[in-house]
Image (cartoon, rainbow, N blue to C red; front, side, top):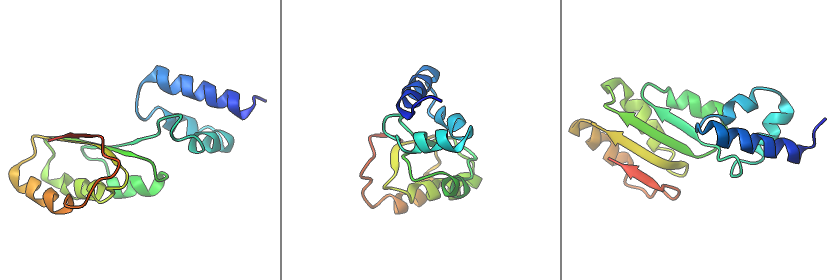
Length: 126
């Protein structure tokens, strides 16, 4: 059996090599030991969740632990307004926000939620 540090280095190599934000999710589905290693090293493995068009945000965020969120919405349909608002409500976890081609009425709805600070936000695209 491999020591936890060896597994962590292997996971780090895998996540970097795959270069997909959600690559770590495959690892947590293997076994409890792997899940504990991944969740125990969120910074090392750059754990982040992606919320995008038609993502059921409230349900998704209930399943995963409290890790940073990347929000990407391109030309969102009106049905996604609740999902976008749900993601914006997690301002303490939002590290990236991309809202492209959003109609003005929807932007006004989002601005009401965005009046508070976003402490971990590093990228904002509107």
